[in-house]
Image 1 (cartoon, helix red, strand yellow):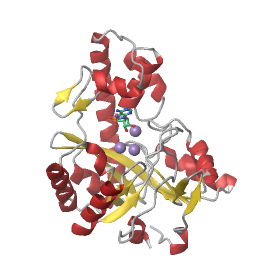
Image 2 (cartoon, rainbow, N blue to C red; image 1 turned 60 degrees about the vertical axis):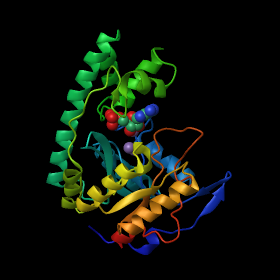
Image 3 (cartoon, rainbow, N blue to C red; image 1 turned 45 degrees about the vertical axis):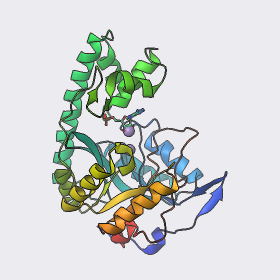
Image 4 (cartoon, helix red, strand yellow; image 1 turned 90 degrees about the horizontal axis):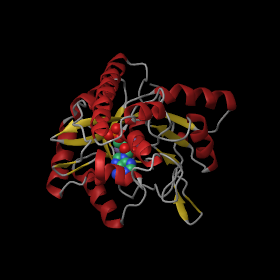
Length: 301
Ligand code: AMP
Ligand code: MN
Ligand code: MN
Ligand code: MN
């Protein structure tokens, strides 16, 4: 993997529209999974938001990366694209997302893992469809599949179908009433996934020469004790960093996450987890790493 010079990662921070904007965003989605924009439109948006370095991290797929890189080359888009993926893993009954960054997207080990994850997604989607049919929505699988097109099929597609057809009033309600899991409580159309393990995800990312980051540790709804266990397990699995800065974190959460990085000698990553334009978050917004954090991109220089 080519080394990246420090000039690829300017740390200029600007205040625009009342928000701090970092110039690096290492977590974003396109319509190759559950994002709503094409890779090209996402890149145009990133240029508008003055992002210099963007990772596209679709769920269990690298399909958007070639499309994005081609667009950058053809149109001279002033963005450094980092190859990315967000891998769903199973750990102790929880679904933990591992972001892979800056890897060789043609690596055979990684591609094999992606094939397995795609099969797990497809099988789970069929079973979710059967459960939703029993709830009175016989076309849910067909409609979700159509919405996903050739991309990774996710629960977000099912949620969107339920929303568009007026069965729920928000995406959140689709998860709360049908698709989600809260603690030990599973909803009517929840299906236990057969994702790979954290170790397997980290191993495949490393095999491809990449860097493994635990996505959004604050979002797993874990007690402090369980979150620490998860971080210890991730570190023992050779994980490289934690995504400690995402939009909408309070100062206490930022401090706690930085302390985990320092305590377990992990690097720090930052990303918006952008899926579609909305008023609460956007590419690059409020993504400044705190002083004292070792940036994940230091591993690439
Ligand atoms: P999956 O990876 O198929 O389980 O789908 C999970 C995706 O659904 C996540 O990446 C989110 O984008 C989306 N999602 C999960 N929970 C919610 C929620 N409560 N409301 C809206 N979207 C959600
Ligand atoms: Mn998603
Ligand atoms: Mn995620
Ligand atoms: Mn994500």
